[in-house]
Length: 429
Length: 131
Image 1 (cartoon, helix red, strand yellow):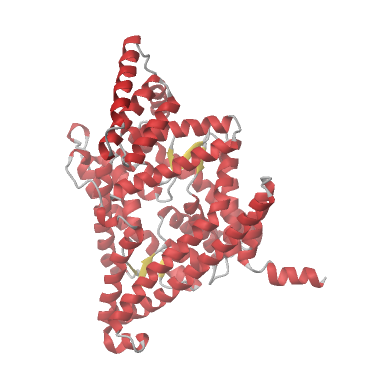
Image 2: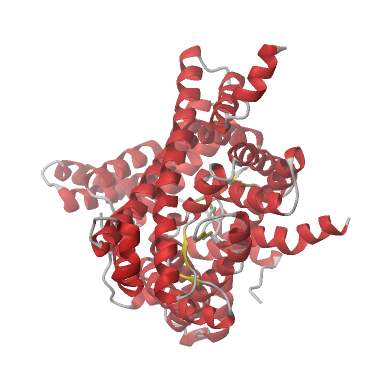
């Protein structure tokens, strides 16, 4: 009995161990060799621990940023970072095990839906599924779900999104790529369709429609060459300007003997370091699970259509990516200033989301509304993808998240589904 | 609003299924072109080499020699990353191989082509960002 108690109290309560055990079970079920089972399980364990370490670094930096922002601007300044949300949910909130199990449940529901319906989409972007699992778990938890129900509902909703989002995007993707065999698997699809709608409404029509691809634009976004460098380019001025507004008197109380501006600079780099470490952890964590899932899914679902990450569309409309990135950034900056006037938190622009989601949205806008559609649609898209995460801030704050909100709008939509529909229904019964 | 209708689906399917029948003359032209380009390709480097490999790949693809086409496209990307017609055709071919592997229940090939498709996403990211 003592042994069982020891296992329950000291081993199964450790999310990292549970997650490693899940990976181990998966590897055994796939009849991998002993060596592969051991190395795979240990890598997953390592991945979880690295992710936790990254999260702690991010939280440290965000806590500091939250304080100086409130002091400097007398409002809450939120950094949109799904990584920060995932890290905090997995560790500080202790939802790591539930997120890992929901992640697996989403995979399974994706296979079931694709196997038995006419929508054959298999979502191949593992990282995006982890973000979805994070959001369904966090908001399911907030709605009052626990245990198996939390995991199954999250898996079901996530599974539906994993099939529905590629299906919704497919009419556009088909026109963009000229083929039906490959789909788009990126949880920002609600935003893409939104941009396509706005572009259709305000863009050029019929023969007047001119594609942005006819414009001469710089073919590459060289300043975005490195993910972490581009993150730094935004975070450094953001922290330094905020520290300057907070003033030396207040900021020095946080920086100790270091100059307050220097301290802000170092803290901004710390944020980037945190994201770097966290994503390295995610890669280790998913490295074993995702290939196994893909192999199983592709064999269980005849005529499966792989839903790939957003760069799958970039080659078909490279100029639209640039236009989409720029216009989405403009829209998100407008939203940053407008939303606080409606009593919402100030959401700072997220450069990486603006690039990947904005760029892809630009392709949709160009498709339905030509040049004018891509430009107007892009600005609306930027506003839209800032507004949606802003709606979650109050709930995140109540749950104890530090100064961050989610990014990918489909995961935000799933969260809002919990907050506005599932939660109230559960409370009514 | 966006005309999601089934009619469109049918149109596209018809479009995809249309296959071009290769004439003997065209076949000979392609083979000659491949031969000439193969002789030239080792004497050049970088972007030019990438372009010639891409042309060889497209010719092989038109001939229906998929493995040779894949080989040439891979060499093209190795010489210099780009996202032109070669890239698009290669992704399509990888996906076809992936589907065949799934049908044949060949786990190793399936993983290989899924991994190659992942790498293609990275190539697209890199080219767009000018890496």
